[in-house]
Length: 135
Image (cartoon, rainbow, N blue to C red; front, side, top):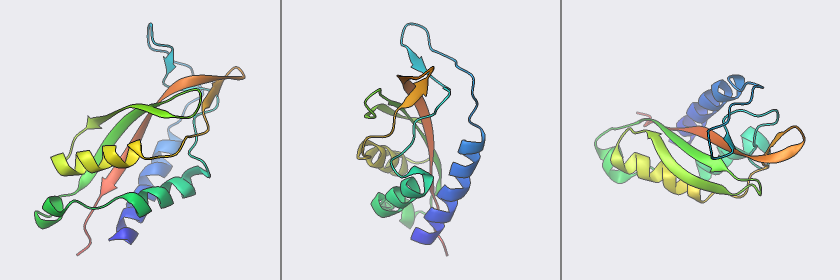
């Protein structure tokens, strides 16, 4: 099961990384950017993020019994100090899977913050968390 989660996460994260753009789009009155010159990064990069998720995600029993899986899209803000705030589900799959994805994201260590024009800024980040059961 861990191998499948790892493979799924690797595929999704590579797509997410490829879609990063270098344009700045700020939300009004919040000074939170959607895209910056230097996007926030999990300590150790994508391989470390995949390992963290693989190690810490616990597949909920009710979802496993019902053979439920899917991609939970979790949004959060990476603050200027690298802390994670405002964790929320942008696309739901199944209640216990959604809760597990949020739980794990809330336990992440501080990230390397995003930068725009040489200064650290708050950045919105969307992380797909894929749940899949191998048979």
